[in-house]
Image (tube, rainbow, N blue to C red):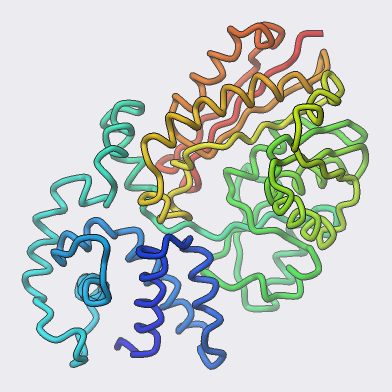
Length: 404
């Protein structure tokens, strides 16, 4: 177990882009992995995992290393040294790692781990809001679970194959997967692998989608032949799942504020052999008004804080601000009021977020049901999914029915 200079240099460059240039970790990691064609899978694994680990534990490592933002390259090397010591790597005699105080690093780690904001490496405000909304016990478990790396979950594209066949195809490529109880189409990778390079992916046999996210489309209770509207489709993970449950029959309208996201969805739909989707950019209020009372089913996958998906987006801990959460709650309320009007009498609506905060979830639904439009709906059921209980992303979904 030794450190290789070219891999570590790439890691340092990547951390500089994330911490100092405001780039998103997933984009930086994707770029880093293409840097050297000679790298094997273990090299790429080292680069990806090390970048994510140091991003995840930024507050803890910078405190141990006694460095403050903005981090210059020497600071980044000191944080890397903390990571290496805590992971048990022998420190090589490189100029940048000279004088690494190994005993001091271990001592500081033990001392700081007594305080949750360092132990779980989160901003003070996030700890305060978590305790306020979920209570001390639940929040302590939840934030610890959110610091575990996310598993890779596949969703079988049932328009093209079955999960049993997909599992066999991947097994032939030495990619081992397991079924998930209570999940019709999910496969969990036993070990991380770059599944995007497989022919099975290029042929649209599966998408990568977290297990919690895979529960949303079935919760909407869609049937072939319906008219369904996904109002915040984004790049369309849930849209594609809905299309497969509709067996490509009926009309599925995917809407978003951003045309670029819908373009991405078009490419994914083509690969998935999904052809019952219409794409509409929400560039005026008319786009919504034209659909008033016209849909059997409406999904509002609302914009949110993302506090349920820190596992896979650890840099969100540092990019999020408390003001953003205050603003997003207002957006959620508006979206729920405006987009719910698309549901026809007797139709159903699902409001979903990838947050674990009640103020973005059940409290939004309760508030909505007291509004003029909300009084026309009946609450059927909701699901609160915590990472600490499921092992997957934190999620919320509420099913409402418009009175006939």
